[in-house]
Figure 1 (cartoon, rainbow, N blue to C red):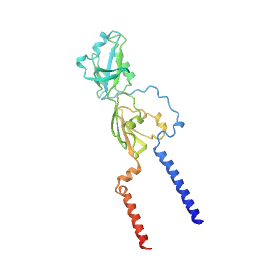
Figure 2 (figure 1 turned 180 degrees about the horizontal axis):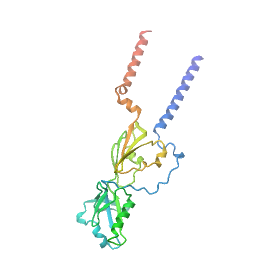
Figure 3 (figure 1 turned 90 degrees about the vertical axis):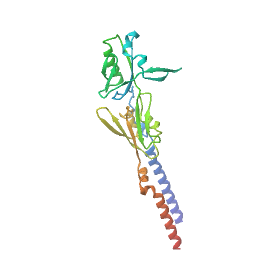
Figure 4 (figure 1 turned 45 degrees about the vertical axis):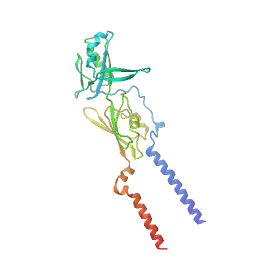
Length: 264
């Protein structure tokens, strides 16, 4: 009877250990755990900030096409082309790119150098249109960043650069593009390094807590660097003792078995 009670106690302790362990695993690995408790801010319209080394497509138009022509490079000067999905047909369009220099300026036809670095797209459009208004009536400018990319490294399945055609990328999307985190990735301490031109900043993000959605690092900026730290299990396994701990336990178990057999 005493033996039966002992077995029941051991079984109960074993079940409690499994349940507790399962809760800890969920706490460490599941994303957005408290999303029901977070007051999600209205995302609005996200706009990237233009930075040095950005490549911009800038197109100028006006009611009279001939008036806008001098402010766009001619077809003989166009340097690149891309396929544009119009929704019904794929169309090949030629365009040129303008490099934002280290001063945050672009060299535009007729206008010369215009400072756009540090401005949101809508602000840069207003500034260029202000300059264009000296020459043409009611100008319209379109701007697009064509080299938007971030890099993801560390404990992800496919580390490397993430390049995209849009200008809006979230941290979860970047991690998904990198094949998501490995089982050894530390989800509570993802490092994001951001280059703001004048200085670099960094922040650690816990993606297991949904409140990071309202942070400044939910939407990524071009050239952000994302690093996923290894968890403690990965670090232990990377050491000599950790890598051989399985062999160590097997050896100890074998020695105990041999001693037991020898002393019978």
